[in-house]
Image (cartoon, rainbow, N blue to C red; front, side):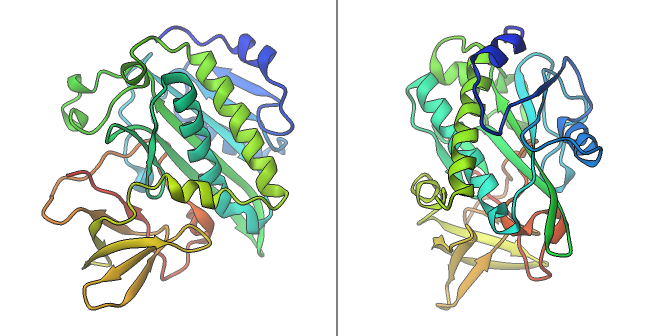
Length: 294
C-alpha cells in the first residue's frame, strides 16, 4: 500500500460534519482509543483519527485485528448523536464502505450482519461502534473502521480462506487517499441524511447476505437453529427457530454460524456492533451476533 497523503484527502473534502478535522498518525495502538480520548477532552463531532499502523487494533470481544504494517487503513470517527440515531451509525458506515468499494472496484459488496463488508464472500472491511450513554443521553459514539487494502491473506494462516483485500478485488492499486476521501464523503452524506429523518436501514437491508440463510446462534451457552428471516426497525436480526418461534438477535453475546460448520469468521477493528446495544447500553437480553463463514 502506498503512503497515505492526508493533505490530499483534506484538500478534496468539503464535509458538513464528518471529516472537518483529520488527526493523522503513522502508528497508534488504537485509533478508537485515541478518538475516545479526544471525545472525553471535548473534541467536536466529526473529527477523524487515522493511522497507517495499529499495534493494538481490536474487534468485537476484544479480538485482535490482524494488521501487518502498511497493508490496512484504520480510522475512527467521533459522533455525538441523539440516542434515536445511534443504531444508524453502523448502517451508514457499512453503506459508505459498500458505496466506496463499488466506485473503486466495480464490484458489488455485501454486508454480513451486523457489520462485516464482504467481496466475493470474503471479508474486506469491518466496523466497530462503541458508545457512552448516561441518563438516556449519548455522550459520544466512536465508529472504528478497518479496511484490508493490500493484505495478502494467504500469508496469514488464520484468515487465509476468509479475507481478501481491496487491491485484489479491484485488480489494481487503489490509492489509500482515494478510499479515505470517498468513505468520509459518503459517511458524511449518509449521517446527515439520518439526522434529518432519512433512515439508511432499507438500503442496508438490501445488501445483507445473511437474510434467508439457515444459521445457528449460540447465546448464554444455548444453541438455537433457524432461518435468518429479516431485520426489525433497529437492525436487529430476526431468527425463525425450528419450532416456529421468532427470536430477536441484537448486539450482545451471540455467536452465529452456518449449520454444520465449526470455524469462526474473523473480526477486525471495526467489527463490533451496532445499534442501541453498543458497549455502553447493552440490554440484559441483548445478543451480539458473530457471523460464521463455512
